[in-house]
Length: 177
Image (cartoon, rainbow, N blue to C red):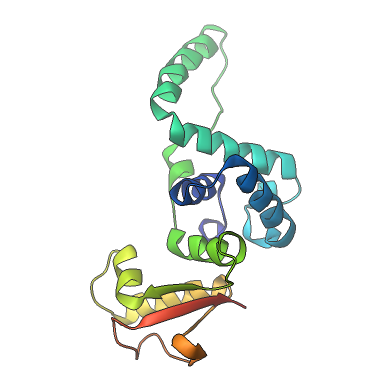
């Protein structure tokens, strides 16, 4: 369940991908904390400052990875000299992403786009997930994620559709319900 929730690293990746400035990021994070609190990891649900600072720290890490790696070795050495353990938590599991395309869709629809929807061809969605063809397992995964993130799909002109029955080159419109 935890990998369905927004992590600071995933949010930083999304913001960096969209090239959003720091003022806008802070505004979006405030809105996510206020309105999408159920979708952020439990350790951040009651600590807005920690949530925003951890996302900013992850963005800083993404922008300066080489510098962070150089400094981490020095920090580890200093901590070992004092007999302390580095519990900064910069592990691979912290930098993993899960369901990122659906998290990005929800955030883009609610906070980045001002249109209230996002469009994408079904083929593009499948390729973002690493697939070329539909299979029942992939369709079930997509439907589960759409349900979890409260995203509805339709065709142009708001025509209802089922993801397993539409053409791969059909443009799908995503809306948060």
